[in-house]
Length: 86
Picture 1 (cartoon, rainbow, N blue to C red):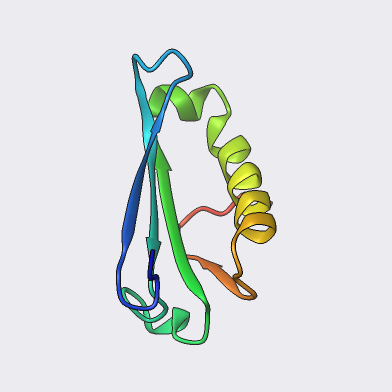
Picture 2: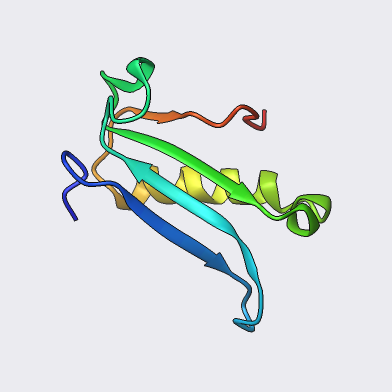
């Protein structure tokens, strides 16, 4: 995957694979937002209302942040969601 030139979309599916819980987007720096030009990756995600009501938005953010920092070579990650959990 070349995130310098290509965006990626990853569907978030329930463990039983019966329900779409949301979606994750990884964009090249500066692709969608001028504020992300100096970042290694521009990250955005959403979850369904049902998943949000169960608290999965915060869980996803924390899991996603850990995964991106531990598995990918990104030094600067910018999240462009309107709501970023504390």
